[in-house]
Length: 112
Image 1 (cartoon, rainbow, N blue to C red):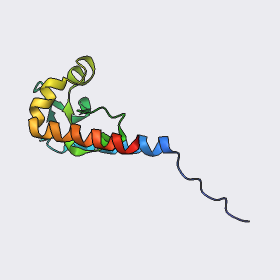
Image 2 (cartoon, rainbow, N blue to C red):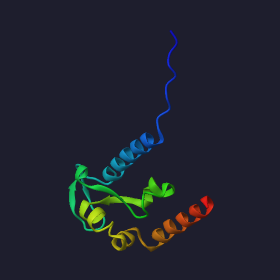
Image 3 (cartoon, rainbow, N blue to C red):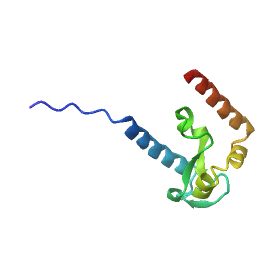
Image 4 (cartoon, helix red, strand yellow):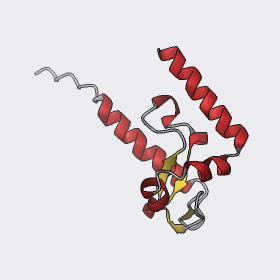
């Protein structure tokens, strides 16, 4: 009996898996004893209780998994205070913030 050909995973499934792995990487990369710190308010908590916050929205795939664009944030900063963009940009530094924005604009121009 012939084997059924294996189906290629759906794009949505691949993106979800990438998001999960990348988020864990971001939240663990600077943790000590599994405790991470929010870059915008300084709150320290177990890495599983914190989030991977994006400076440039994750709806833009060009920077969605860019390590320079994503840092650890608490739920309060990331969700309820909309990512604390001003404090996030101060953390990144003016040079990196400008570079991320310029790269994003260049990539968007290529697509359009």
